[in-house]
Amino acid sequence: RRVCLIDTDPGTDDAVALWLALASPEIDLRLVTVAGGNVGLGHTLRNARAIVGLSGRDVPVVAGAEGPLLGAFRSETQVHGADGLAGVALPEGPPPAPGIAADAIRALLRAEARVTLIGIGPATNLALALATEPALAAKVEEIVLMTGAWAEGNITPSAEFNAWSDPESLAMLLGSGRPVTLATLELTGQALVTPDRIAALRAAGGRRCLDAAARIMGGVPPSRRFGHRGHPLHDPCAIAWLLAPQLFTTREVHVHVECAGVARGRTVVDRWDRSGQAPNARLLETLDADGFFALLTERLAALP
Ligand code: BDR
Ligand code: CA
Image 1: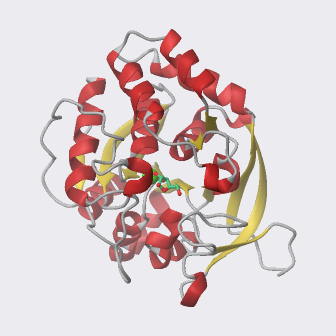
Image 2 (image 1 turned 90 degrees about the horizontal axis):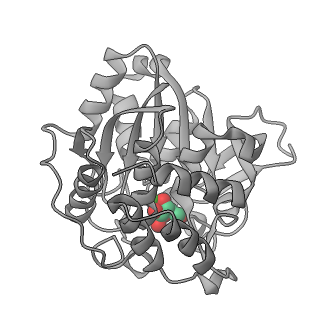
């Protein structure tokens, strides 16, 4: 059982990722930190509290960065809806825990021997925590991120949304010296939500978290402009890696984050070792999608 924290910006797929983690005994989830991202911090914080509250679990939810270290904030309401949860209203959750995200992350790292950092939004909160007390990096077991792309982006032709949202922070995490695992768009594009998969989820249902997850997943439009027949369930892929690594194939790679110009936020992934630079990340390359959705359904069915 790993001690973990999740840094998030819910976000439709963030909601499902949080429930998957909350349902899974392999993950000892101690802290949820929140940033602005898919929608503004006011919404992401409210959503994170509601998602944790619906699970009946008592995990502190702490507010963090409203926007990136540098550059402009931009939300992604076309995918996630104006409220961030595709219009699915959840009951108000418990109040936020006091303090700010970077402090809460550092406090958890100080208190524990080892903590796995799971980042499924812009990387600002995680980077701020490590930048303000670099010695705490030694306590980081692994950093697992949904971010980046080795080919095209989804927010610009070059960049994936989380990487584009705060590339300087992502570069800092990749340079932390701790093991980093990346679920990029090419991986998450294999985890497509289709009507059949939502129906299978509902068939296991009758419970409030699973029912809310099915409604949220059903509210996201298929991403046809990227040639997909469904929409990618990005963030739960990062959680699934910690639960069932046998569903994935991986490759050790060097990743450079471009921070300037038209390619800002691009993750330059050297899959074929053309640069000769030492790997700084483990790339998740392929996913057994049917196994992934079976795991998701089984786990969500165990929540209230
Ligand atoms: C990432 O950006 C957000 O829209 C999703 O929640 C995911 O974390 C995908 O690019
Ligand atoms: Ca997210």
